[in-house]
Length: 163
Image 1 (cartoon, rainbow, N blue to C red):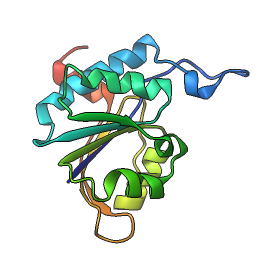
Image 2 (cartoon, rainbow, N blue to C red):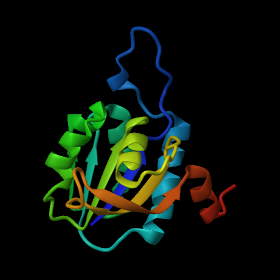
Image 3 (cartoon, rainbow, N blue to C red):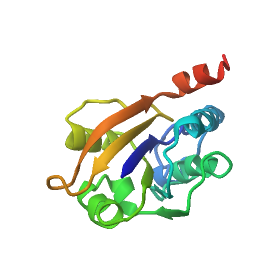
């Protein structure tokens, strides 16, 4: 199966008294998400895609850019994505999902930690960036993966030649 991890686009800055869950994408974050998913349309794996996101507003707004760009069969949110709980993500989302492609829109530093756990690689997920993995949920505790592609929003813009 393929697993795609995507970090939400750039969001409004956090400030005292603000509920982090309610931070929205700024214009730059919307452009990042759009550019990334325009590029992803060129290499997206065949098969049934299920889209998962943290229930935070900025991740759901990022996931909304899939609607007209990359087809998916279902969209869900899960609090484990926001909490960075890889055990729950594994049990509730990845293990036995039966889907060809699972895409998770989440947060840093959790995406980096999950990548490290699956591959041993240190990758920094910039806002709006995306990584695609060939993932085996049954190889070791929590699964293992091979990185197939990592793309930043700047690279996605270069693919469109939109400078």
